[in-house]
Image (cartoon, rainbow, N blue to C red; front, top):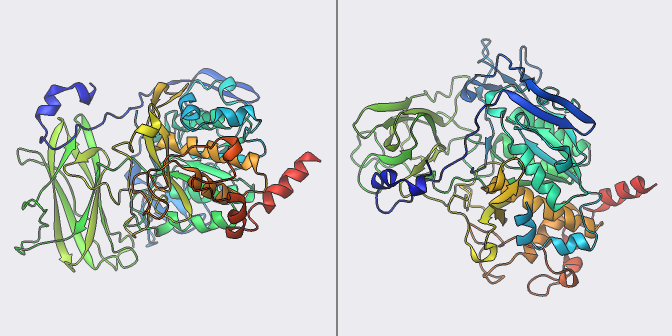
Length: 544
């Protein structure tokens, strides 16, 4: 039932809290209709489900050792395993990417794309890759996406094997999310060179980024979030890949996340010295509204990455009647081979309602800052600031927030759109784009979240690079920021929900100037003087 029209759910919530947004849930379908550019591959064919299909994502393990024995997949930096190694090799719970969706002509209208198309700017000569995991449950219409290539970075570390749409490895790969993102880019930049790339974990992301640099990709659109690899401060294994992309002149356009109402952060405080954190309202409990019918994941991490073990925290979640619904009491031991400043709670929520989280210090230094991410719920008096996830927290990623397309310039950011600054103090997001978009995959106006706004912004960047062939992807991103519609003065601090403002292409006759009349083509080359050289050379070769 739609929560916005459910009076029973309203009656269970404090008067100051907003009812949780309903998210789309993929219903597993055993029949797949999938067509590749060369023609139909399969129709009404059963998926070939592997042994890993029913694995809990949190049972997957990462080791920073390439080509580890019995690895599910590997990269030049490490391997993904189905279980912890038994030889003492250091390991951690693998970070499995999360889709930033809520369930595309609206994007074109909101961003003034039609005039650019009519003038002949359609993304020609721009290489765009979609990094995603869900390409395995669809009746993909070849006429919708046109020509494209697929690359499986799970099956092969070089990403040279095409995606087999009948062979997903995990149940969380079932869905159409990546295809919906590709549809939006195709609508925005119909002549861009399109690549669909399978990415689901840190290991496959490492493979994909090396492939993108090697293949001369210009723009990567990734509507995925990675949790617990850092304190969301721009550091950690995922963020360490961003300079590699920048060195190859590949821009990561990534979603800010949809976690504004699912985030909490503060310093641990235990005034009565009983070991439990005390929240601002004077109790030891953080209320979280969870939907019923199964398990809900809640993550707590703290700012001791790189020196894990100085503090050991535990997390407990209770029902309103005091019955324990979930707990996580991992020991943070600096001498162990899997110390992480993280607790992952899988809370059993049979019924929708309020559940109550406690943070307990089991041992160590009481001076610590922790954050809560209630991925499957909504936190009472949540803290939107700091809710951006990796890699959107990195300075070299172009991070995108979401604004409803219908009435675009008159709307504020979507209430769920993650906001900055990051836990490291960096102003984010960089810009906001439209969501609430129509796709063949999700239907009319049904694709919400920063998952939808990210490919819309990526498509706009492709048009800019088409019009200005000497402009590299980072130049194009700065131009789009300069053209963004904003009520703020240029000297004001960036908006922590909208960044530079609403992404919108200018009228063609005025596109050489920003909002304040600054001639873009005069100052952009000073920032990245060689950014367009690779694209110029490639285009000249393609024209021979």
